[in-house]
Length: 286
Image: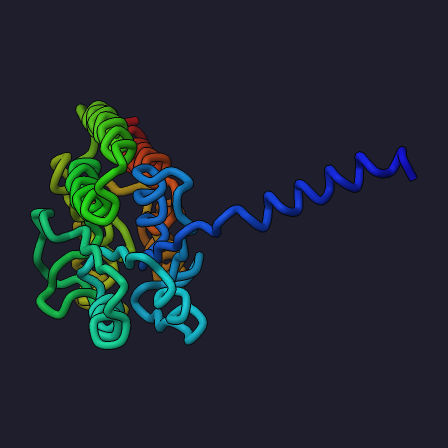
């Protein structure tokens, strides 16, 4: 019994410590890339609840009752602020969850307008702001401002922001180098890379037509433009059907490349996308 006593006391102390440790606060985010952004600024301070699950599309997403309960238990809800489902959710939070702070990361971002589909802002605003390192710096600054308002005694968030901003500057320079001699045109199913195209002088040809499957006229025009640009690769997102992409690839004798702009690791995803586009340019010149 005497030999067992130290082990018993040790177990009791560990149990007491685990009971005494307070649970982490929770933050909810609308899409996976925002989970990455929040982690860069807050570290492991919060448990993060991501609403749109992996492989799902924000275009058709509806939150479940269980997810809404987690949002209600969150200190803040972080969103892009330009997606249709976000607008509906934001109204519900304002009406039913007054204790949950809403952080709209797009508020200070210079957004692009145009036809971008039924799941996007009703005024045709392109919501894919996180596909630009320059935008990500602005988004992070907006998040930092809100966090400092909520937790004024914390200095670590600003330090983390400065590191993240420097990382985005480095990523911006890396993308500039990739596209320095590179392509000016690429084909993609869903037009999710408008901000990358804007920042680096690219032309985005979208297969999708105003958020819908393309018409015959749209496809014929796209084929002509793609042939003129000597396209050898077609990018597509995992959240959308591949049938149209494969048919067009067969017509153009092009390969298809799966990309994931909605994935967690934004820098790695943007670098992969950039290299995929640049490789297409290399193929054309050989």
